[in-house]
Length: 229
Image (cartoon, rainbow, N blue to C red):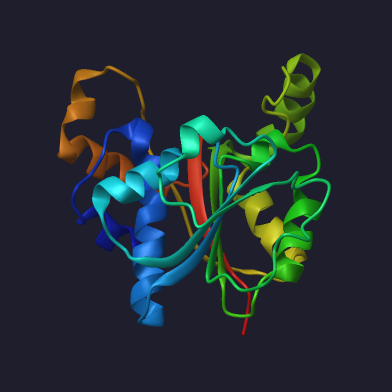
């Protein structure tokens, strides 16, 4: 799926919801590719925001949606439609990943891990050939990574951001895990909650196109990695 094609899709959400919109687009493209509903495993579900977005949009269809989190919040997750909930720490074990899923989601999770590359490699080893891993996180130009990461680790709060990513680090992480990067793009040039332009679709499209052209621009990146068949 090209970014130009994605930018033409509607509806376009405000910038704060783009993380869910990107994932929706990736799942929509994969469903079309597979020609059937997808089995999805979402890791790091928090209070279920991703599935709430999917339920509101209503498509693509999925045959199964499993939620994984290190600290489940049952009161926030009931009645959302999860087929199964698993309480597990991605750092500790991936035994819960049985290789049956078409798509795994790691949305704004890896920046909270001290050792994201080994975690992705362990997960990739469990993935079914041909399946995809969807993710996204804050991003900076690559030269900033070795400067910023030690600084944020000194002041990080519990479950805060401790890893810093760039497009280059992302591609290297995929290669080390034996995954192929199918898609990678930035999300915006400028994001400001409450800014009047955030209400206009043309502003969102501009940000999407800018992010596609300049993924190393400080902001956020979203990506799809595929395990070769």
